[in-house]
Amino acid sequence: MFEISITPATISFFSIFLICFLYLLIGFRHYVASVSAKVTDDNETPFPSEPSAYPAVSVIVYSEDDAENLEVLLPQILEQEYPGHFEVIVVNDGAVSSTKDVIARLEQRYSNLYMTFTPLESRSLSRKKLAVTLGIKAARYEVIMLTTGDCRIESKTWLKAMARHFVQGKEVVIGYSTPLIPDDTPNPWKRLHSFDSVRTAIEYLSWAIAGRPYRGDCHNLAYRRSLFFKNKGFSRSLHLKYGDDDVFVNEVANKRNTAVELSTASIVEVLSPYPQISHRNSKLRYCYTAKKLKTSARLFFGSSSLAWWSLTVSAIALSLTGLPSFLPMVVSGALWLILTITLMCTWRKSSLALGSRPIFLTFPWFMTIEPLYNFYYRIKSYIKRGSNLTWG
Image 1: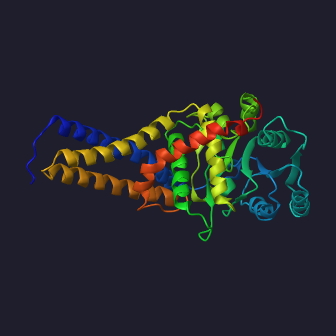
Image 2: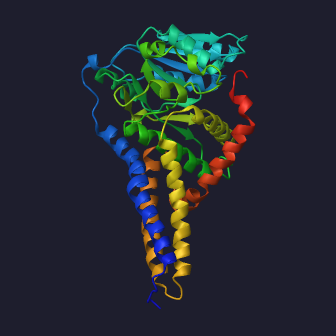
Image 3: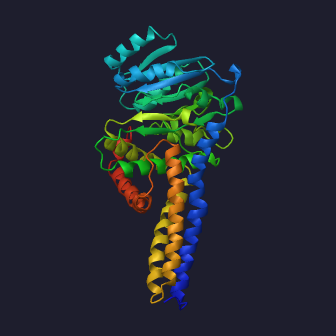
């Protein structure tokens, strides 16, 4: 039963299995684990005690009919425990009257709150890029902190956490945001969406942690005003409707000038009243702008998905070609199980660290279907490519 006949097929399948096993255990697991390790590091790093360690900051809030949430969000920002000077500029996209009313009421309580708006007749440009540009031009301070009107910031030290890197000479700080989806929200795909969101986050965050930043998070991103103008703003991507975070960070960020901030205090929550639609839209946008980004991250994580498929297929093939002996089946099955449990635990730890749903038992299934899921959205983004452009 456990005697085995060594054949060329057995050697080939075992070689493939072993290579994929080591690739996932040493490579893929390392990058997944680096995210939770960074969260722990940032949580344990104390804030500087000297007020001079905190630069003056202009917080720019892009708002697109977010009046109801701004009532909650703006006091959360304006009441931050921040030793330095800061102002909050709301860029009202579309000049919605309800948003104006909210700002008018809050301006009576907070002297450092301001509002500007994008002209309604602006149709040939990305309204989001135009709004951010107007906000940055209106800013008085060198450090720009970007977020959006659909966010919630529960921590009173969010601004301290993000801004503490600029005194170290950094020009870009990449933060993270997590979807805020109530458990009772009817969404049959919420576990898959959670896995996909965390996978996307791990991809760009782990690469930035390793010194290869290539994209950012529009809900939680900071950079220097001078860097924005030195790069001529979004001038090289004005034909794209989106990419004010991804493409811009890809243009200006590098190992020396960029920091990643992942402390629990720095993580922003994004309201998703229609989570399926929100996930679909963000997925389609990124599938399109991802083609414009210079990075090797997609190649590595794509090859990790291929390695997972190859590992599983070679384990099955090794079990079948080894019959009537059960030794290949036992060995490959045991190693597959060891790797899977290791990755499940590592993934769960990083998911929890990022404030996301703790995927565990469903990890192997989601890891298997992820390439097909991504391929579906690539095809869909190609079909809908016109909606990602401001012209031609």
